[in-house]
Length: 515
Ligand code: NAD
Image (cartoon, rainbow, N blue to C red; front, side):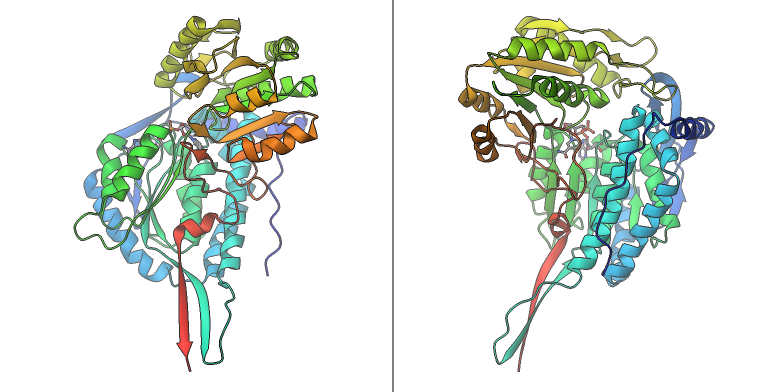
């Protein structure tokens, strides 16, 4: 029996003590910038000449760290190590495996601000966003450890007079974990420890944008007693090793989170059975979003504006769940737009490694250029209502941007921008609000701001998203409280941080004994 899961509390940065502690953590991390990090295979730390360099997005010449790059030969070695480690790790009891996650969670909790400070440098996360990312990482460890202990008992089956039936769960084998950069600690932690606590072994290839904070997770799991070979850390160039990891005949599962383009490529390649392969590959692919907040005629308009602004501009819109479309009933459209612009004017933008700002820079030059291009598209497709400014003199800064009177079928309203850009469009009635909300290929998150119970009930079934929120924003899902994952082209709806998640990495087995 384990105690019930409770999520990790967030830090209040209005409290001077917390502020000072966070500044101390930023200073500590500043003193550790520029170091070199290894590949880790079977517990062995391997340094290579060829390195991935991670820069601070808010201070683009500041090197956060240099991480050794794995080649195909390293992947072969890592797979051998994962196969060997699987033989023993899979025989550990769920409780023994869970205890390693509990120990790691305690260690991270003790150094929470330090992990968040790495996120401020490696991913450009503002303090509260970094704090939320670290808290979510701790939550994943605590939650999946508990889930595995529960699943370790299997499920009860009926028995007839001449037989006994048992239903238990077994690990699959070695697999591959491919996370994105935007939750550079939480998603890396969650997608890695879930298959591990289930008894599998892992080759984890972090994002090339945020490999340093990913290494910090590997380090802490090792300190917590994770045996050698259970987690192999193979950072590298995705163009060089991505397909190789996915195509490998010994890969049992691929736990991917990232863009639609990469996810669908992996999904397709993993379906191909190669010579010598002895299992079908499981693919968990959590992909992009084009998330909408709809505002009804009868609604709290201040709440609507606050929800739109928080969900659109928190972490500069670089969340799969970010609100990039506000669809508003025509009778309240002008007022909601005006209130949203007023709130947006108050947002601060700067380098989170130096100060507690609302928004930092976007992750890299490629994203900066892409968002800038979309701002130009927005000016063609509709009207710029606020913002539109960019500045890459020091870091990759894109200021919060609002477009109004957008065509719901246009590019700004259909394509994932992944930056601080939100488009407003008008609808005539609730039918049209829902129709526009559902008119993209994505189905990740959405929110309805309404005081009309009948409309909320309709949205429950008709709004086609995996995570639907009423009278609040559409971001900030919490492990164990809002299991997360999308419909349609947003992915396989794996529901990370939910009660069914570990099943993706387990084979259920029925054993019948006759007597
Ligand atoms: P990305 O697809 O560019 O990269 C994701 C990961 O895939 C990285 O580790 C990358 O190195 C790797 N990769 C790239 N090409 C590969 C290949 N050919 N083979 C194997 N691996 C390859 O995505 P990103 O820019 O890192 O992340 C942003 C995207 O992630 C956005 O679309 C966002 O919506 C999505 N996302 C989704 C969720 C969710 O839960 N649905 C959560 C966070 C982010």
